[in-house]
Length: 105
Image 1 (cartoon, rainbow, N blue to C red):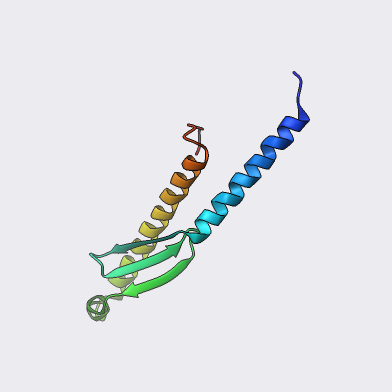
Image 2: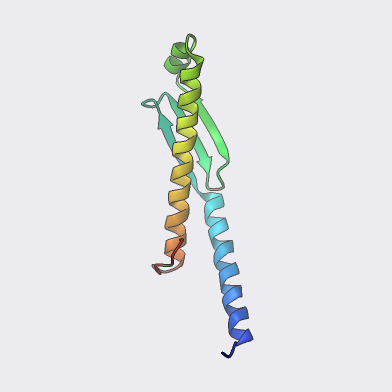
């Protein structure tokens, strides 16, 4: 089995370029999701950094007697937003790979 080192280096360089492009894309991506019918809204970057958390006044008032409910809504909104980031990542990766159906991506 002959290994063409130049070809392997070229492929690695292309992979690094693609990763760099993906990182740049995700750095500019922002997604948002909510829970409790909009009671809690989370905005997150493509790097999964929470940029903003909004609690509707009605949710805050309702939570006065049930802090656990508010905590659960926050967790649900953060998780929903993180799933949207994952979906955006998968879409961007698939787009960059030109529709190749590689396992695990």
